[in-house]
Image 1 (spheres, rainbow, N blue to C red):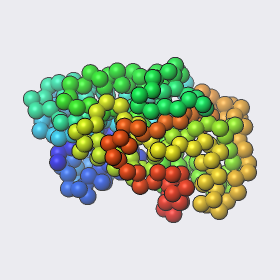
Image 2 (image 1 turned 180 degrees about the vertical axis):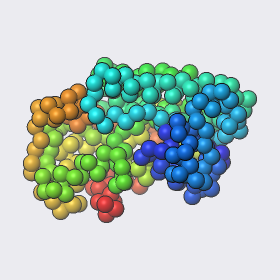
Image 3 (image 1 turned 45 degrees about the horizontal axis):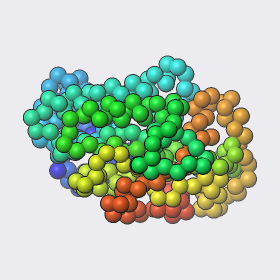
Amino acid sequence: MRIAIAGGSGFIGTHLVKDWRKKKYDILVITRNCTKVKKQFPFASCATWDEIAKDSQALEGIDALVNLAGESINSGRWTAERKQSILLSRVETTQRIAAAVGKLTEKPRVVINGSAIGVYGQSDTARFDEDSKAIGDDFLAQVSRQWEEEADRIPAPRLVKIRTGLVMGADGGAFPKMALPYRLFTGGRVGGGRQWHSWIHIVDYVRLINFCIENEAIEGAVNATAPNPVTNNEFGRSLARQMHRPHWLPVPGFVLGLVLGEMSELLLEGQHVTPKRALEQGFVFHCPNIDRANQDLVSKM
């Protein structure tokens, strides 16, 4: 299989590229800096965004294109400038993908474009799946909606909008930061502890992306979350059990607000999201519950 990925050098992208190498796929990484990518993935081909814009020939004949490009939302306070950068990094790369695919004589059979469960908005009481309306008007909901609107313009035979939740891995993402207080015996609930975490183990995320590529019946929105969301308090208690640490020291919400500003929403707000579409199509999760996921991740730390 010939497969292209934008956003291949990040936490999630790295896991995908390594998995595809094991499968002996022909991999093309689209990036801003091919020098860095060649050091990270010497076995992969590389093309810059500028090269693709001038001549999309490198994408001719690929079977699948995965676009996960976008600036991290959890590194630095959300200043007005930073929020604009987060939005444009997703919208503009998706526009570039649409333009490149539009020029191709032989288009990829499927394009998987990034999105986020933030599109549903934040709630402690509502339940969301792919059939739910996007009700949110907060910053992340607005970003996700505009991201998907641009994705809908990609002229591919089949488009999957992968609505990503909290992706957990021992080597990156949010999990090491969430585990750190428990390492230091200072773990506890964050804010009220009732906010939902709709999470997914990185192994299941990679498997789900591959499942979406291979299963021609899947298109449109797909929630990349495990089938059993947990509250922040439940997550912390599970992690404490696996790490043999106490779960006792709460972090008040106002403290996070003072330290992180608007970005504190990432920890203080959430939504209960389930992967209805994946389950309907027969996808089986390796880590369907938080205890199993935390046990696996703690064993790899």
